[in-house]
Length: 180
Image (cartoon, rainbow, N blue to C red; front, side):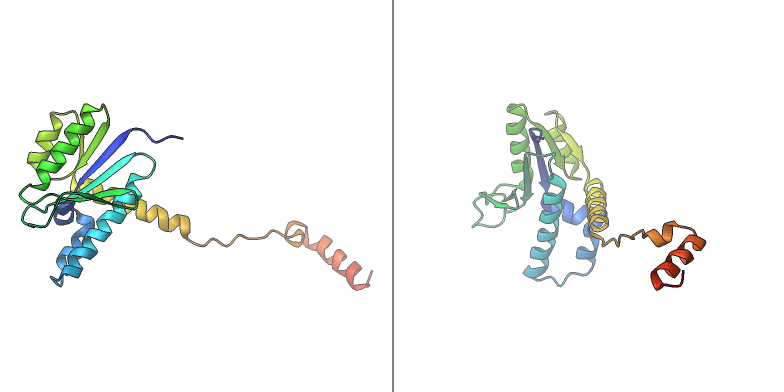
């Protein structure tokens, strides 16, 4: 089955700040670069899982406006385009441009953010929207389904001895043991 021509665009830092699934990362930070890397990694993995077969293309956009070295080039991780906005440009601007360009090519677009200004801007383009908590709940459900799918399940063998009456079983055992 071919994936629909759908685009998923995720407002990275907005989801990490607003999404309930990422609260544990926010509440116990060590405020090092490692914390930021770990939280981004968790989000990117969730987007990879969520993308599945429903989305042909996915972007996670992080704000790199204050980073003079940020070029805005996408790095592909697990099939997801990870973008830090170019220096001097906000992630909001990149998200709006990606949405606009995809709609111009008649692609379906879903933008994941709780930022009201982005939601308002993309709504006028005919883009579907999902909140940070909505995405958090969806990612959690996917995790739970994966755990259930991967949980070991011991299959019970039904033997002949379990399916026949005790009297017949006793007679068969007697025949086997030569007591008949």
